[in-house]
Image (cartoon, rainbow, N blue to C red; front, top):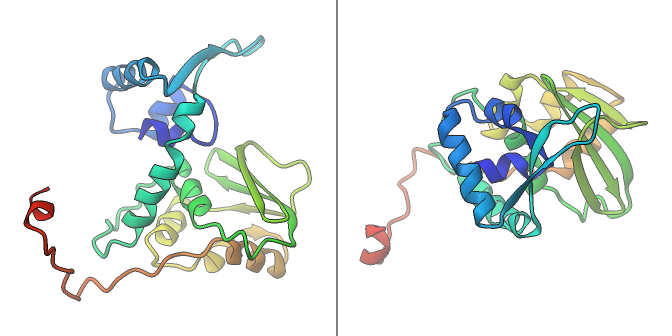
Length: 206
């Protein structure tokens, strides 16, 4: 979870605590030390006037993104996904990035700004290539504010992304539709259907 919180960019200790509200200060400090010892992240001090200490992933730590995306794609298709509205902004944005369809965007150049409470993210698309960073866009094609309830509903597949965006986007309908098409949501299996059986006893034991 600490790696997940740092995938989009550096964070201060207080920012990490806000993104991981259920982790204690001592446990978070220990996790950061362990990840730094493993070469997955580093700590540096920002230049004045900020002069704040931030944590950021190293190249080795960034290699974990593919692993976390695979876990996220697997988890979001679970028929038992919790109905809770508790969902971090970074988790939601990383989920969108994991579902990005570069083929749809191969002829597109655009900038989209996504605001979730006090968090702001810039999506830049350049002929299929997607980059996501924290902060505002200079000249966005679309600016959208998404509340946490709508965000959670989209994440669990209970509400289409296009519907959630159209309710709050300060943009034309075409821009909203275009953005929604870029991030396809996987279908969720019916929770009433029996789960597939494990045919390997050793696998079942794990």
